[in-house]
Image (tube, rainbow over the protein chains, first blue to last red):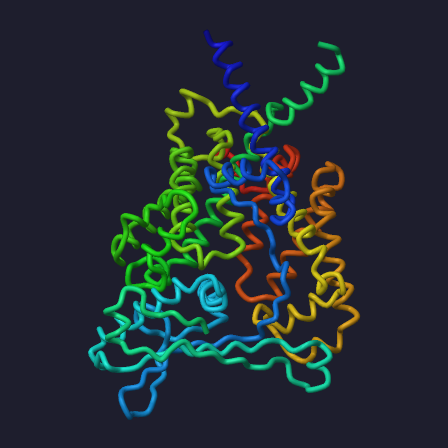
Length: 190
Length: 304
């Protein structure tokens, strides 16, 4: 009885390992090449089932951001605007160097035009957090200020002796009460 | 069936069924568990930010925009205490895997952890998360010999550890490493900055760099060379590692490449360690003998 079970185990290993090997060999191709091949839907299905996504485009694009700052600007009617940290919970300040994962969140959410829905939900959560502090009324206005500094061309850096140029953008302002009350309050992209 | 076909078939099945030293699997299991623990420790301080309902990522929005089924343990964790409990539970799985106690169950817990947090917070993922998730799948399906593990004397007497096990897990890890490098290089082939050699200058001026500054401009020609050298090294590493007598050159090139990246960048040490876990699959039995000879005698005895 032992021999057949051993051999069926071996067959199982060979079949499964072969399938995964083919998957990995196909996975050596960049995504845009893979998508042109007929069997890519089978590949994508297998990828989704095993959760072994083969996307190894490390530094494929040019790293053109020199630094990034982001903060919430809160303004109570007629008063001076106040800067508040944008990290939730706790409204702490964002540090690009210390929080590599949050930096990715910024790049994926703030600078990606297709992720508006994540920006909306973030602004809603931020408004809730601000109201929970008890320091602000629902009429208070809030906006998310993002200040990325993009690296100039190498020629520009050499001639101007300055590495990057800032291109600030603002999402808002919105009333805290409106953000919290509405289901999908924020439409514009920064 | 002709002799040629039979030989081809046996060569092919040999890729997966040839006997491999069980210490290699044990070594990878231990290294992978250690790197996973380090990754968990890195995530721990920010667990509320990434995984709770009052954090930066709304679970309902993620669920809505997930392609395919949303399967994450974080579906059951909404506040800081449940999230912390789950992280601690996953950490226990990593410790069990490290010690080789119930290794298959432990590997399952670790794989579920990688899948769960990737689903819950896809926007915060970094390169080594992907490497570790793919490795966790390969560790889960690989043989789990009871070697270099914490087992009672009674259990050892009852079933002594197998010295050799099928090599399919090691083969797949080797190809996984090759896939990472080859895809990375192929994806850059039509990128003008990589092809013009300017990539390294931009990288060293970017927020990724440890010491960004105007000094970079003084080394423009050298950095062009380094850019091309990185591409060549990434192409060469899998080939060098695959050839038995050149494998140390492959190890050397890989360590230099990743140590260089870690030195010049912020926060990329875990990427270095995650990649090194896959490199271990290229070790040979004689390397394990060498390693075992260098261990203190008490540890050696315990391992034997």
